[in-house]
Structure formats: C-alpha cells, structure tokens
Image (cartoon, rainbow, N blue to C red; front, top):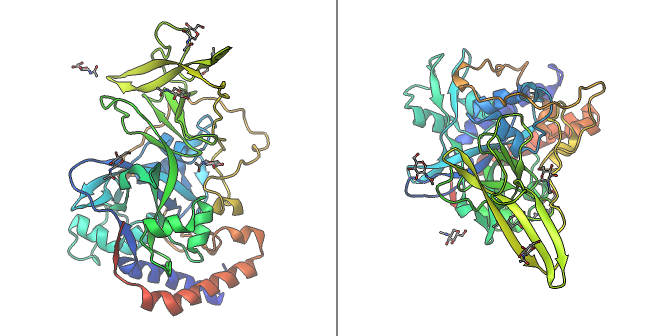
Length: 432
Ligand SMILES: *[C@@H]1O[C@H](CO)[C@@H](O)[C@H](O)[C@H]1NC(C)=O
Ligand SMILES: *[C@@H]1O[C@H](CO)[C@@H](O)[C@H](O)[C@H]1NC(C)=O
Ligand SMILES: *[C@@H]1O[C@H](CO)[C@@H](O)[C@H](O)[C@H]1NC(C)=O
Ligand SMILES: *[C@@H]1O[C@H](CO)[C@@H](O)[C@H](O)[C@H]1NC(C)=O
Ligand SMILES: *[C@@H]1O[C@H](CO)[C@@H](O)[C@H](O)[C@H]1NC(C)=O
Ligand SMILES: *[C@@H]1O[C@H](CO)[C@@H](O)[C@H](O)[C@H]1NC(C)=O
C-alpha cells in the first residue's frame, strides 16, 4: 500500500486498535486440573517473511514438526531454510499444559529487541495469539512502557484439547485468531468443518458474533495413535491430511485422506534407524499383504506401535476380513510455499505448487534440523517496512484482484471494525 494512501494511516491504526483491544477480545478457554499435557495446534500468521526454522524457533518446536503439521514435503532441499511469505497462515504444533486452571501453551520464548513493545510482540510477532496483558502477567513486568531489551519473555499462547475428541470422534484443536473479513461460515469452509460445530465448541450463541482478534478453537478430524503408555510418543494424534515424524525421525505416521486410521511407514529422512521389521516375518513397518481365501481376505500387516526405550516397537497383525483392503492412501505433500496464493486461505493446507524451474531433485537431508533456542534468533523487526502488508491482511484475495479493489475492501473492513467491533468487544470468557 502506498504510504500516501488514506488507508495507510488507518492500517497502522488498525494494528494499534487490534493490539489495544486484544485484551478484551473473546477467547475460548478450556478449564483443566492436574498436571497432564496434551497436543494442540496454533494457527499462526507470519508477520514478516520468515524461514521455516525461524518460525519453529519462535514457538520452540522442531522444524520437522512444523513441516509435518502443514503437510510440507520433508525431502524438499534445504526445506528449513526456505523463506515463507508474510501473511501465510501456518499450523504450528504445540503442547498444552495446565496453568492456573486453564489450558495454555507455555513453551514459546521471545527475546526482546530495541523498539519492541508488548503490543508488537503479542500482535505482530506472535500473530495475535498472545495478548500484551498475558505476556505482562506471565513475566511480572511492572511497567510495560519500560521493556528491557534482551530480556527473554515467556509468551503464553492459547491451547485447547477438549479430551481430543469432538462429537465423540478423535480431533485435535487449532487455536485460530480471527482476521478482518472472517465470518464463522468462512472459517468453517477454510477448515472443512461446520458452522454448528464451531459455534458449539466456542459457545458462540445464536448471533455467532466474532471480531478480529478473537481466538476461536477449531476441531480438526484426526487419527489417534494407540501406542502403549510406556512409549515416548504415547498419545500422538495427527490431523487429517498431515503427518508426524516420530521415533528419532525414523518413522512417519500419516492421517487420511481416505480414512482416519493412523498409517506409519519408515520415514525417508536419512538418519540411521534400528530395524523396522516385524518379528518372524519379512514385513517391515507399513507393509500390508493380502491373500484372498474362500472365507474372505487374509490380511497381514506390520504396524508401528510406539518408540519404547529408544527402540521401535512393531506388531504383526493378522486378520480375516470380508474384503481385501486397498493400500492406504497418503496425504499429498507440497513444497513450502514462497508466495501467498489465494487458495492458501481457502484450503487448510496449501495446494500443490509447480516445482520450481530448474530446481534440483529432492534429496533427503543428511540430518534433520533441530530447533535452536529462540533467544538467539535474528528475526525481522516489526517496523512498517517489514510488518504485515495490506495484501496479507485482506486475506490473500489481493492476488486475484487489483490493488485498488484490495485496498477498498480492506478499508471497508476497517471502517466496519471501527464502527462496530470496538464498542461491542466484550470481556466474556467462554467455556466449552
Ligand atoms: C475422553 O475421551 C475418552 C475416549 O477417548 C473417554 O473414555 C472419556 O470418558 C472422555 N473423558 C471426558 C471427560 O469426556
Ligand atoms: C480428510 O481430508 C480429506 C481431504 O484431504 C477429505 O476428503 C476427508 O473427507 C477428510 N476426512 C474427514 C473425516 O474429515
Ligand atoms: C514394504 O514396505 C517397503 C517400503 O516401506 C517397500 O519398499 C516394500 O516393497 C514393502 N514390502 C512388501 C512385501 O510390501
Ligand atoms: C495395523 O495397520 C493396519 C493398516 O493400517 C490397520 O488396518 C490395523 O488396524 C492396524 N492394527 C493395529 C493393531 O493397530
Ligand atoms: C526401559 O529401560 C529401563 C532400564 O533401561 C527398564 O527398567 C524398563 O523396564 C524399560 N521399559 C520398557 C517398557 O521396556
Ligand atoms: C493367513 O495366511 C497364513 C499363511 O498364508 C496362515 O498362516 C494364517 O493362518 C492365515 N490367517 C488367517 C486368519 O486365515
């Protein structure tokens, strides 16, 4: 957006308003007790062009886990160094702990830099997932105006598990920050779920009123694992259309699209792995053999059943089924995108991009990247030059229309927000 356009000022005003109203936006929270933790996802919109490894470090997760949650191809060359575009909406895996009686993700750390404010950290760097007040409270900051540079802050993030089920079916919950222009139907469409489901889970009531900055939780159908509770990956759950890497990067477990049975195979990352063969058979993890007999189909499968004491546990399962099963389908994987496409905002995962011209053939990385500690990151700043731009804020549709239209829509959304959102923001806390 041109600096002299009338909307430019408003854009910064919007960011400001979003950050000052963030403290009073609605947020669905889950009460909890005890000290268990559970898996969840964060919907994170990049505030600047960031490497995948930088996103991972910001949230203190393994870059491979970010790849997996977004169905990005892990064998893509130098995948962790790939620069993702500002405005991209990613899924970041996290774990929810139970703090002060509510579910929260407490693993994100951020080291303050000159020019940072609690509002810029919460609203921009963490994409509105945190609020300035939550950061202030979590770190006991007496005077937010005097934020020390170089201090490492805990950034509490929204998180919900709701027993990892939705309508009695396995589900993983994604915390989603409502953007300008979103409606419950548009969010439901984006995540292939229903309006009713989003309304019920978030106790939205009949009006379904949502405002930019509100945090909703979206249930995503998922494949649960049934590993024994000695396994270090006990409780793993994978959202439909994505995968997870486990067992020291040796095993890749996928979910969907055909059915919601977790399907694990050897991962194609070249790390050295112990044997994945099932005892007293020639089958390895993921192999399924079928043999038609008069009585039906004799199915033998070699299944992964968890990572126990550093070794891969396998189990040979034999069953007689009425019909022979088809080979499991795997989710389609894509290279991480380098540009914002309109479709990214309509589909939960990016559509396949054409391979880059002259691009090298995918070669497995010798050893997958490990997440560095976020404190030492050189992240881009939150100045107007590197902050989110209007194209990103109008939800990607800018690429399919001209700038004028985009700015117009953006400004209308802005005036709507100014007219309604502020006075009507309430402080209610919603329980499931
Ligand atoms: C949680 O889900 C499990 C099955 O997945 C069920 O047995 C249990 O009763 C549920 N607990 C609650 C509190 O809903
Ligand atoms: C899983 O995702 C695929 C598309 O990727 C979709 O066709 C299928 O209906 C989804 N399954 C469920 C249970 O939502
Ligand atoms: C077992 O799976 C591996 C790859 O995971 C494959 O190369 C091999 O052909 C499969 N063997 C059988 C018998 O299906
Ligand atoms: C083993 O894997 C097959 C194929 O994915 C699946 O149908 C079967 O239910 C699994 N068995 C167990 C015990 O997990
Ligand atoms: C894991 O190893 C420890 C000691 O090395 C042993 O005590 C424990 O029983 C093992 N657990 C399982 C499930 O094999
Ligand atoms: C399946 O076939 C194998 C030999 O191919 C046999 O040993 C086994 O008993 C059969 N299982 C069932 C359930 O029919």
